[in-house]
Picture 1 (cartoon, one colour):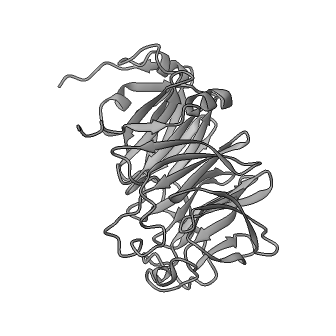
Picture 2 (tube, helix red, strand yellow):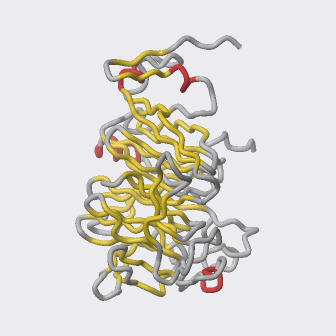
Length: 353
C-alpha cells in the first residue's frame, strides 16, 4: 500500500456542506509541519486545502481585513485584497480573497502562543517570559501583564502561560499549566495543575485543571479546552466550578466558533516526549484534525482527520464570508509582486532569475 499523499485527510460527508451552510472557511496553524492551512468547501461533498509555509506557525489573529501570524521568531502582519485575488497570476479568477504580507516584527524566540487583535493593538501570550504582551515596531515585545505568582520576567517558561480570551477588545482571561515560578516548574504537576486567571483582578478563577488551553468567551460564557482530559468545558468564574460540554477525543487545543458550532483542533501526542508520554490519553491521542461540536447540545457533528503531514495543530480560526481564500507567505517572490496602495492594487513584474 502506498503512503498517503502530503496533507491528505478524510472527513465526514457533511463537513463541506456545513462550511457552506455557515458561509466560512477554516484556518489552522501547525507548528510541527510549519504551515498555515486554509480549508474550504469545493462543493457540498468535497473540501480543498491550501497549505503555505510559515515556520513554526502558532497563534493566528483575525480582525476585519487584517491577519497576524506568530512564527518561530517573528510575527507577520497580512492584509487581504479581493482585487489581488481575482488577478492572482498563477490562478486568475480562482480565489475570492488573498492575504498579503505587509509587515514583519522580529520578536526573537519567545514562543508566542495565542494572538488577538484588541483596542490597544496586537496582544500576545509570551509563553517563554510568562507574560501577556503587545507586539509593535520598537521592541521585541512590550510586557503588559504577568501572573501575581511570577516574580520576574525571565525566558524560563515558568508556568506555561498559553491561552487568552478577549472581551470587548481587552484581555479578560488567560490559561496556564501551573501556578509555578521556577524554570518549567509546571511540568511537575502537568495533569492537574492548570489554572484560569482573570487579567484585570489577577485572581485565579479556576484551578486544578487538566492542561487548560484556548479559553474563549462565547455569548458571555467562559469556555476552555482540557487537553489532558479530552474535554470542552464551561467555567463559572464566580465559583471556579465547571460543567462538561463535550467529549472530544485526542489532545485538544485550538478552537473557533461560527454560528452554533465550534471547531476544535486535535493533535497527536509526541511519543518521545518525556512530558506527554505519561498522560492517560497518550495511547488514544493519535489523531490530528478538526472536530466540530454543536455547542447548544454538546454533540459531535463532523470530523476531519489528517492521514499525513499534520501531527500537531495549535490554532484554528474561522474566516467568515469567503469560500476560497488564498495567502502569500514571505519565503518566495510572490509577496514582492503583490502591490497595494490606497487607490488600488497591482501585480508587479516577475523578477528575472
